[in-house]
Image 1 (spheres, rainbow, N blue to C red):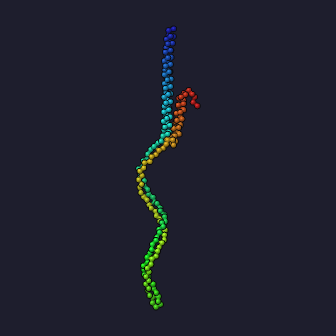
Image 2: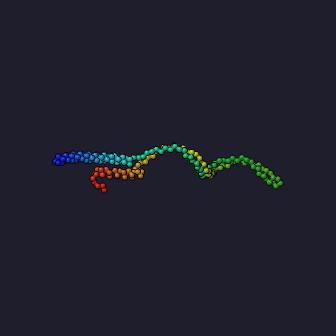
Image 3: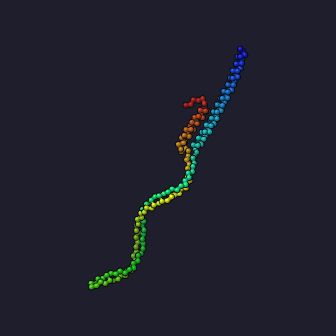
Length: 176
């Protein structure tokens, strides 16, 4: 019986040693996983910060024809100055009643009339415009990620990553 106890004791010690080696390997792997996890969290936080500071850039290209059909009313008064010297060269016939007969007297008129005036001419017109306007534009658009609602979500992700990193740093501390 003494021998069987010895074999059981040696077997128990061997199994305990193997168990101790397995648990030590498991603890080492868990500590290594924790170190790798913290490194990945640091990388993720860096990516979130860089993405939050980034700007979305895009060029919108427009190559279209826009039809335009409209009426444009114009209503304006134009003042036209008029300066001239009008020559008069004519003969008028003046009938003279002499009592017993009528005599037609020809009177020659040779003169000039100076004219200096301003005439206001009202101008009111509606012009119909029917055309096609070609539009060929390249419009650069830049939107900062920080100006979008996405920035709040990125901040929340960063906060959660920070909390996870603190938990991995001190795994046995109770989370508040």
